[in-house]
Amino acid sequence: MTHVLTFENDGTAHTLRTDAFPLTELGNLRVRRASWIDWNEHTQRWEVRVDPHADDPVFSDPSREACLAWEHEHLNH
Image (tube, rainbow, N blue to C red; front, side, top):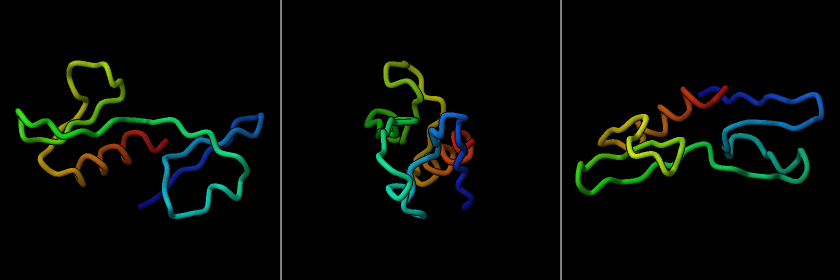
């Protein structure tokens, strides 16, 4: 799996969180959620939201791993 790490002109880095490389070596971190993956008991599916207040998920699947893969593919830029 490829992880993308981008830098702004001011040195700010952006990436999806991973343990694949030690991000703390870059300096102090400020971590914000890119998405929310939660279990829906009614539909019996995992749901991905990029806005926690949205009624409808942007993706759902019975497999949490499929949701993590969707997140990586669509938000890792």
